Image (tube, rainbow over all chains, first blue to last red):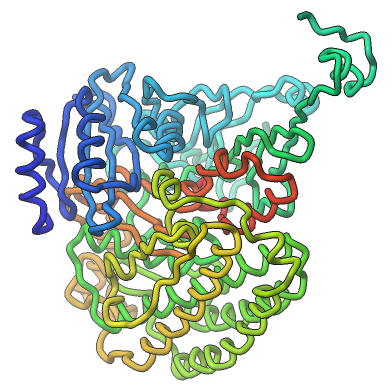
Length: 208
Length: 410
């Protein structure tokens, strides 16, 4: 923690009793319940000068973990050159949601869309919560831990394209090898390797 | 009032509906394959005549799932993927990523390694700005500048090739050091490059700075206020063009940047012309830093010699000594061992602040690695900036942003 952190923690603790210090290797970091996160962010921005929302992202602690999803904010004070990290756990694991920060920073718009797209976290109050990196209508949230690295087959989004190309499905990007990592298990097992051992440099790939 | 569709001509239909020459909006797709979108950015524009009334950038055409990939491989294996983020400044990405992981390991690299990193970062900045400036000028019809800047960039690429073995995808850093020391005489060649580069840069900028056409196409176009720039999370030259003197090399010095003296240029109005001026001046400041780094270039090791569980041992040792062989084997199979915890580090890259947020549960693979890409944040202001601009100005504004889609889409 930086030298300014204890003063900041004391000042925030008086205002937000449910605030807790968060283990961190570098920046001052705080945990806050989801219901108070916007109030805390507003307080940090207006009173403590953290005016730049650097980053907004989420962590998936894997299915079964409680809580499963944590949304993490990184703020920067441009006048003092200081960072702070704020983290809030999503209350529901099946329908994770977090109040939107777009009212505080318009720049949160795309970050929250990305979070929704890749992690499936909803941001009630967001003006336009669409997918941003994957296409509209894509059924999965690929950054979740239960989504395999090899990907999953999905239907082509456009019927006209499907008709013209004669195919209805986009295959999972890396399914069938040669490089497919196991989503779980030890490090050496999750190394990219040939999942399908029926063919290699010496043996031809079976047709079909 | 129900619209009457009996008129075949849309303009006549519009005029009929309002009983007057009512405006009709036109939707136009700019990109994803368009020379001025520098990659695969697509912008859905709604036009009233030639004036943009609504803009919706569509990103993601280059999404490769880098963050997912990072969770499935060891820290060193991810270095080549960082090349493909901002592929116009791969060296700077390599350095930013390596420092982020080293912060996690609480590892300090020796001064020589820091100096090498500063050197390559600044050369990468020059090369990226040369490309950005040349492409921006070409988008506005100034071909010549592009030819000048591309030739200089080519010279830099030869230097990169000599240093790293690759022109483009350098993958130069390792966690705890760099892939190899600088070759003999390389620093002199960098110095020579800098000496001949400054006059050519001045000449290139002189082609534009007081050029009537250039000024008309950039001055007062795409104005971003200080407040907006901060609210949308802009960083790098786009933020400084709006007059915010935020430069992480000064404000959060890393890799020994505090030893070098350089100025941070800022704009006054935040228009396309200011962003152009900021990039031009930044190249000159980068040359200053490069010259100082060469003058102060420290001797000593170029990797963290004490970090035996993180930096791979020398190859000659691996083949002759048992202990190093085991070390190398563990590093390759299990990855560099990191403590549990989380860090966020961002570096001042040519395009802005490139950040890595790493959550580790210990071991050789990150649990979560989030890439905070400056191009992504910079582009998020487009729906605001483009509205009210003329269609022709959209090209100027996009050029002045100097974004890279590889980084935006990750």
